[in-house]
Length: 169
Length: 169
DNA sequence: AAATAAAAGGAATAATATCCTTTAAATATA
DNA sequence: TATATTTAAAGGATATTATTCCTTTTATTT
Image (cartoon, rainbow over all chains, first blue to last red; front, top):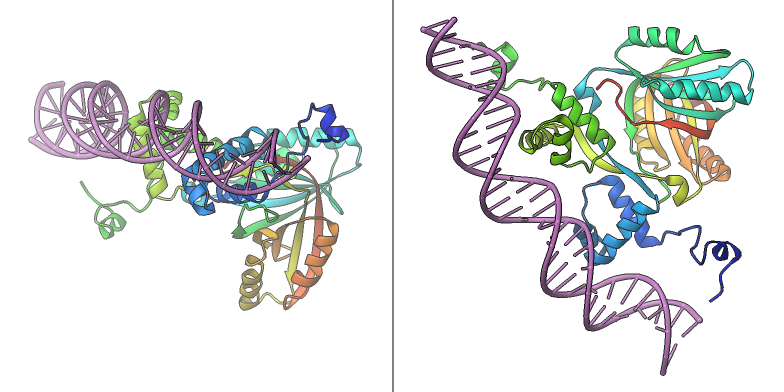
């Protein structure tokens, strides 16, 4: 058996632990339902629990599955509003961008933050109690950060779709 | 004991099942780790498993917890690009908006879709294999929908933060 | 055909969910 | 303020169920 140069470097262990069709089906099932157990997944795939169990463990230890989370019905818990805000900096100096990211990482209100290409530099997903709270947050937390240029916001009126499913599985 | 008019309608059962501080702490723990069991949550809260177990079951049956999902490391599974696209329609007729939403709901590539206020009508989160696939998808799937006006896209260069935590718990 | 890897099957362990009874706490009532 | 009533929590016991391990069989690859 021949090892390629990468595998040789790792003592025969492949870097790219590839996923076969069964792995992908298991991931798709767990993506829908973290509580699915080896036995029920095995039944769906026409297998037995042992190989399925071992594959799940492998997918966990190798990091294909990062973690398991409860999905909450936030509207039932407390009324809130969500705002997507595009932000651009005065200058695209790398240190400025890092500084911005470090800051927003600390804000619980910013649940997601993406570095994007195009007219703006960042896209933030912000969740707060109400419009007043958003105004306060934008004014005191975002606008005060150094070198903020333009900010353009879109208020979410309705969450029409949120599948949280990786479409390439 | 007096019932208010809403409670009377439900035979004494309150509509707004309110969450106390313990419920919120349980939700916060499960939001981080769906695999946390009653015993370990109870330990963290200085309680015993029974009341915690009963509260979890209540939170599930009353819908505060919608479901449990595995969070995947999609970059390890397959290279992909994510694009946020703002879309506006020619006219904001309600039926046109419904039609648009019905269509995008069918596209696996559109993992999230929000109705927003402001310059545009919708915000889509789109995941595809590569820029070519995005061009193909935008051209054949989105641009061909009836009454599409403007489309403005921002390509994700980096996912700097994705907490998936409801900040108001 | 041989060797390796994966899957199957079964069995045992361990842990958790679930139930029931008792105790404590909080609230309402006298 | 004391007492009664209701609700929630605690504690323990049981039964179910999943994990985990080991051996055998099948499939795949060389």
